[in-house]
Image (tube, rainbow over all chains, first blue to last red; front, side, top):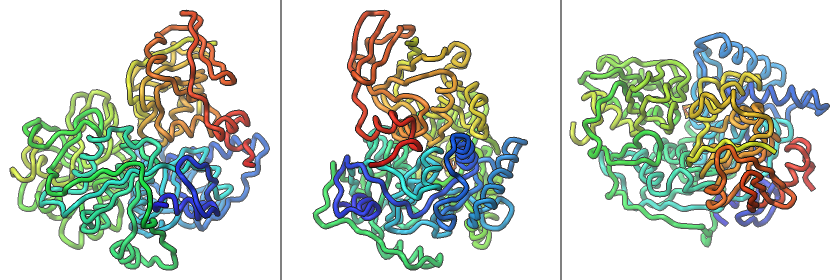
Length: 422
Length: 160
Ligand code: SF4
């Protein structure tokens, strides 16, 4: 069995599973945020009316809560959702509630690794489609809707169809100026936004061993854009060290068998990769940066669970250092811990000196909610993961998805720019 | 029976079905008012109870928002007929008992037109086009999905 199959087998008390088996897996961790949380509360209200017991959760210590999509609250409804969430966590005794304005908080998928909330070998579900992100730690991590998450919060288990696995092998180290983002964009361009529908995407090869944990998280994050059920990477010493630095111990990682089977194997040479963008209006609409260089921009956005980890900010800072931006540019660190590290290491000063606005951690602009949404016809280069119509604001605004290096280089020139040409 | 509202497109995503700015809404009727706003601002006023959406591949891709099937079902949509669905949209539709996600083949997708009257029979796995007097096959639901649908959603379903 491969790693996804082995995790699901262990979690459902089976010695063997094969793709298409239906399992009821025990869940190790579950997450809700300020959109899915109130959604789950709504489901609980409905269940109560139907006479289903909702007064006790399966295990409050395994559930954690993020405030990210609509913080800081821009209007009343968002503010009320935060109040709802606080009442909920208090009522059910959930202690891991990362609150805006109270120390560490940030985007849910970023907290999952920054705080080592999710560990290798576990089954983790979250009320958000990019829950896949945590698969970079060797976890089966999968996004679910409100009803499914409500079910998990009450019973600690959920049904899954065991996915078939597509294996992506990367040979060699990424060239300079090419980031994990370019690799995952390349893959999505090749297989399409439904290329991994219902399947697992597993990444391996020497290119992955060479990659930092944070880079790997960019890959698993965007497996969602290829329609995958989960993205996963076999955990190695880098992952164990990363988690140990964050105080995690006592977990039992799982590795795939040597004779593991995959539905399909794709192979890439790292040396062939180059900076790419996804053009509007789909993450599969891929072009080399140099093919679209010169496109005029209104904004550069360096934020989100995909593109505002510490390493992403560091990459942007390398470009922005001692330069000035020509267009409106926002850097939004994905969590307070990242913000603080960026401050301590001088990155925030580099951003401010370049003329960039640095915002508090939030999903805000990434999902077109608040804090810098796009107007009609505005064009943005962004380190986020989606560029469907209206994703970052007006339905006729345009978003190009790119790596932090490309977003920063483009901020300097005001046009889409390959960092190699700066 | 219901009428078809056809969007002859692939990848109709959740940002189109229910734009991100409305995610803060949790009242089902409020959510429904903004259904399909990203592609068809008239949708809410023209849809009637029992109507069907017909679309191409990968319907409902994008975010995990249950708002998407909620918005459609609370406008009256009883089923979405598409060549394929994104997995979270599919699960949400079934587990929350909001609407039926019905997979059809490319040919059937081509044959059904906007405004056609349809009848869906999930026991026979058939779709009747009353306007054109044609009958099509739908892809049968998997065993677990049909059990959950029959039970009326995940919470009413008792695993064996
Ligand atoms: S940053 Fe964007 S993609 Fe990530 S969780 Fe928030 S809204 Fe979703």
